[in-house]
Amino acid sequence: MKENFQKTGYEYINHTADAGLKAYGKNIEELFVTAATGMFNIIADVSSVEIKTKKSLSIQASRIDELLKIWLSELLYLHSSEHFIFKKFRVKITNSENKNFSLKGTAEGEPFNPEKHILLAEIKTVTYHQLSVKKRNDYWEANVIFDL
Image (tube, rainbow, N blue to C red; front, top):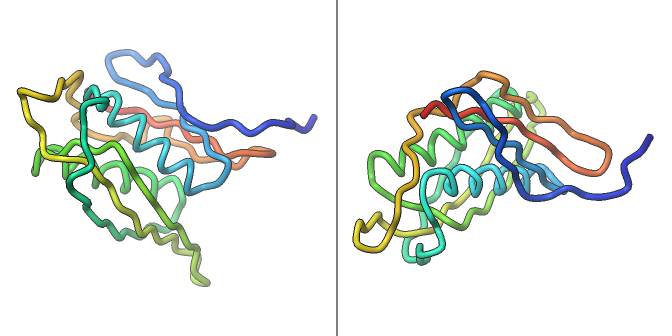
């Protein structure tokens, strides 16, 4: 039975001792954006984050689920090491002839300010546990588990 709607956004899924996220998108780029948005909404209340800084990323992977893990891991690294909180994301994904996936993307936000921002959870890593990226009839869907 064909689904005749397009799912977008994300929802949290229960997972013992960790945080889980199910992201949706009408295309693969939107899926990666909603996954990043969902991850940063686990980390912090992003409602007070202003767009002051833009970070560019360029990554490659042999599988689309691995590309998602690397994308989220790179964003998490920028948060952990450089103390940025992001709230706006853009990505362009291509699949080359040799079957490698490439992502060029940006993340926009600002440096963490304890007087302005509220941190909600510390994500230690993006895991491979239950990681999946699937094309459904009218939308893309991903599952991601984060180690807290």
